[in-house]
Length: 113
Image (tube, rainbow, N blue to C red; front, side, top):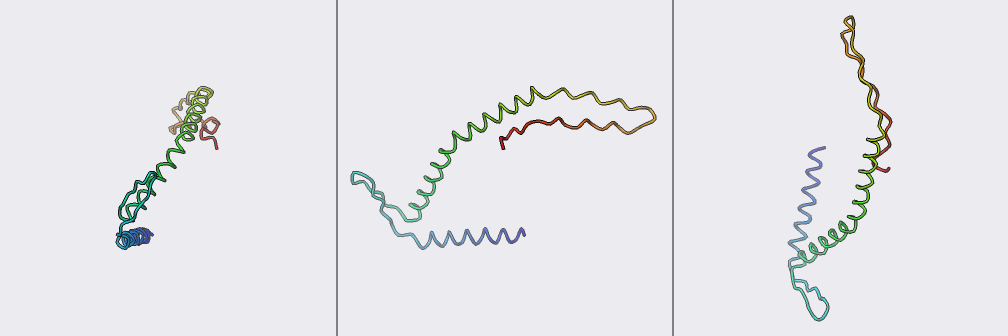
């Protein structure tokens, strides 16, 4: 399975590399007010992909912050509401096996799912 994944990664790399070699001619991107940018087509596609990726990440940042804040609040509330764990029972001289730890308390989900 590991070799199959490496083969898939190599196929994707060589496909993209062939795409880059086949599209070396210049492309012109026209902006407003008569400005233009001339660059190889592969560079234009890479720039458009990177810009889209950056806009998508920046669009998700407020939601990530809200989710992280809610998770911290839920975790703090769960820590305050969690009862103190009882002390483990002492082992007797006849029984050399340690006592089993108490089961964990039922805590609310901190992930909001």
